[in-house]
Length: 152
Length: 152
Length: 152
Image (tube, rainbow over the protein chains, first blue to last red):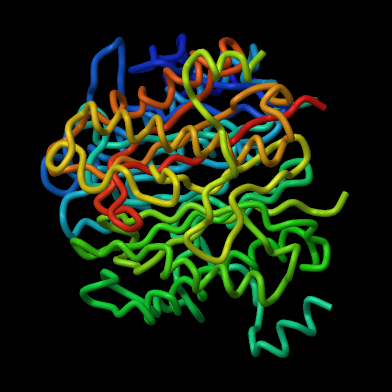
């Protein structure tokens, strides 16, 4: 069912992005999956670089958040076997590389949140924190981490 | 018991603040409740705006943290039915919108931590991270998220 | 076994660092341990102060991350009784006090991640987020928090 929805939305969930360093893309602990912070990388290339509100528009920031979210789902899928095994998306934390005075982090994060609702419906209704940070790895525009709960 | 303590402290725990975007104020997963990041909003209005250490004093930052914490408790109460159902406040993460060179994030966060101890005693003894960030949603002074564990 | 490895690496895990304020160094909730954010303090003294990429080199940032990690392990050990009780290091979040334009947060965080692998092997393979922040408590160079899962 989730796979069908992804197809309708034109979204492909591939293997998790290779971590930038000495850690793993996810850890399964009990029924929870914790993903590493995901940046907007596609096919190994950083797609959204710089500060939202200066180097990037709000719309580009939202697209970056969407891509981070897709990478989170890749990690959860690798942990769970299938996205159908997700009982609930518990939490996302959205770090936005923010220009001075840029305070629309919630709007940027909606690029991720709306996609979760579109894909999962009720199961995708998540808690969320969104904050602005001064720097992110390799000048990424956004970084998102996720906690999901799997069906027992 | 908790309700009595709140009354003594003159604190009212109302409905959770409406999220700024496409997510929910809390998710209950197993015995855990994860709240969304809460900002110092009261009756729909942002009460503490700007950077602590420039636009706001330390004392105002502490008051902002206290209000964020009250909003976290509103979310946990909505999840749990009653604050008496809380087994333990597990963790708070305190993001402080910080002026350049302002490094008293722990003192700001104490506005939240001290209130937790005052309300819950042992149950309120929590782990905590406090960090300074460059921007927060709608220029909020502080943002706090909470993890609580409910009684089984 | 873990204690032997620590001895080989010349690392001593002492009592948890005293929190800077009104909270506790860790909370055990179910099989999970959540640590408070740890800064690079040794014998009560802050060892790495300032912004990585300006006041401190990358190597110093890595050493700071390593010391934060050791302090996280002190907290987990106090929670668990022994580091042998750890089933898995679930997650670390690494906040790097970053100079403008410094984007090597993953390399800084490796100071912590590599140590986890060195000490724990497979058990130490963790998920991770690393972000750059503008200010940290008492001008600490790095702050790290950890989630660990204990054996049942």
